[in-house]
Figure 1 (cartoon, rainbow, N blue to C red):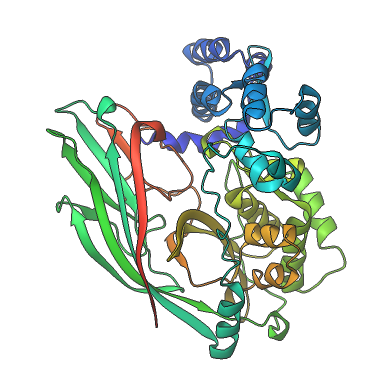
Figure 2 (cartoon, rainbow, N blue to C red):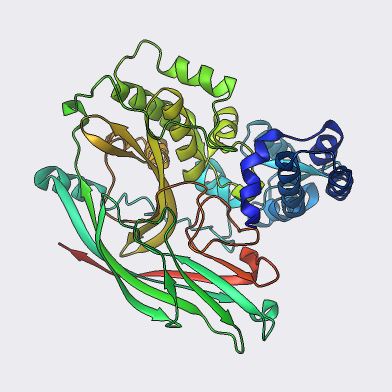
Length: 461
């Protein structure tokens, strides 16, 4: 059985006693109470699935929030010597530092420092040392240095195509490899879609790999091997990615947008009372589905702040959490956009994979929404949020209806199975941007294997 299917029932919630243990961070007792409740044999299969998923979440939460208050202050004062406890408490009050209770004491998100450094210019200006992991932070990560040229060329030509070649690999860390144990490895590869064509698998190692169909919802290349010696699993591929320019003001939508891609998908795309109310408030007085989608994009890009997030494995109702907390990363914002669009009758889909430029390669998520008679259109809420934070209205507006051509689409659906599917818990049960490994007996966490991805070339077409 694929354990990841249990997440489809996560929204059923927790009994009060287990919920109290979880909220207080008494995870050992919470897990023990779950085992007791399941052992009684009087719960539905769906509730058992929900509890099993919650149990695994509780096992993983301490790794997501490793810093006690003392340890958080130590990290802060290492890089900003005059940083005070009062300032830490103020950042928490402002919602800029994520935290939970562990055994009744506050513990802080493992990437809180990098998140502040990326999003808070005053905080960044006070940092006197830079020997900390940036978490992919790059001054040109969102393409500021090439945006104007790309937009101009797209407007002139109507579309812009690039042939992109990428090398990607995974390798189990030596200390977690048991010789003679079977491993099952998945790496994301490009899928066929409106934006991508001429997909070529250039190099594969080892050669005995299974390649999923081009239209797989989450496309991967897969290896299964009994490991006599450790080695990496590698694929090199190329594809053409085409970005078409859309002048939003020229799109005249039909009133009837059809009935596809409008459903809820538990636990993260849910039409909760809060999100229904929010969607209706955002789109009040608007009749055109395009105007409604634009209003939703405007709300997110003007009201939501960027922040690094804990593993999606450990999150509940991601879209609603984004709206309530007013913060999120690219995937969190994308889920809010999709959920609000669907709640207002606008078909919307997930897309994810990589940003792939000559100078940068990183995981990313964005959305598609369907407007008849035009078809599928695109939106990148987090790039819009980034542009808003920089005061770049031209760029914020561009990423509603348009994308740059420096993308690799591997996934066209959130929360889809691989081919073949995994048996054990995925590191990310919803998305796949860097790959997954499990053995014949156990799942492997991200901390147990090495991941590498590199753009080998970008050819102008």
